[in-house]
Image 1 (cartoon, helix red, strand yellow):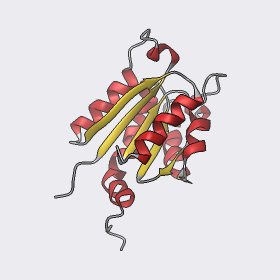
Image 2 (cartoon, rainbow, N blue to C red):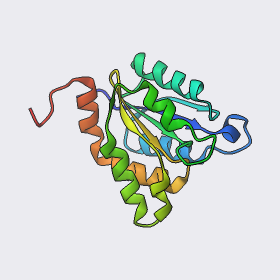
Image 3 (cartoon, one colour):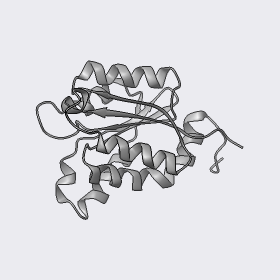
Length: 164
């Protein structure tokens, strides 16, 4: 039996990091991972600061903490929304189809979802995916990620997959 899929959740929020806002989107990601039987390997909240975001992503990926690292927050058009830039700076390879699918799914019920600048890709043996900070955006992200997770884990772990 393969080891459980390990998920790490990084919430990017000035207010959340200051303790002035509940981490509802992070809670939703942890609940999803737990319900699926995944191991929640790490969870942290950082302010909207590129160096802090990039530092956590590098540490988790390079230390092999998780197969999937999901960020929530900081993907919009606001001046403090720097999660995509911080993520792109640490990625080794981008996987644009993932966030394209999240935006497309969200657009069906919430047209403003296309304003998300989220990115996704790999670093070391981890897939990193940015999701919006809204609960709806996280639910759209979960719906896209859920059917991919076993295959993603096989790929990032270098395991044999069903496509040879």
